[in-house]
Length: 290
Image (cartoon, rainbow, N blue to C red; front, top):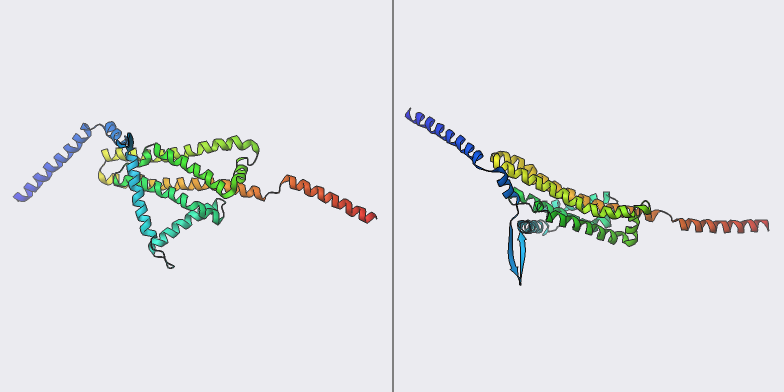
């Protein structure tokens, strides 16, 4: 009987202490300061030659994420066989999905296979860097420099790949389609696209990071784990897919327009054909009269 009383007393004391600890935690901390501490990036300097080079947490985490992803990809694709195992099947399905997506945007298979490695690289790098937050590492995309660099690099590749696939002439045709007056708007579009890619990636990752930092402060671990499945894992993967999808769509748009313009007969050729046809008709009429 005394053991039961002692157990009840211990449980009561434990519960009172637990409630008091929660109250003290909410009263003592400054939410704004804690979130601000989580948002601010770490910066360090190291000497390279005679200059001080800055390095941030975004650089370190991106190196770690990319290194881990490269090791995983090597492990998945090191052994190739006519009868693929599970690892090879996963890689082939992923590559096939990217190729099919590129072809759906107007590229032929050869063009899609040319674009696939870089588009896949964008997706893998962004995905690896985004899901680092699952392991409580700050995602590099919360540093605005990371998505801006990716956005402008992606557009530079879009221009390079498009010229490589359809030539300078085909690229210019896409810039003046459907009328020459569209040229300044198409140029402006290439300025807006990298900004759009950058801000979309930054806004989603930064917002998810701030929200999860807030949850880690005020909510139990179980609840943050449930929300983390979306904001840390699923949303990070989704943003990588969206970035890659838009990149291939930009290339496909240019390639499709260039191909459609190649298939159209030129007006000059039509005029020449009409003149030749008129001369032949006259000759036939003269022969018939004679």
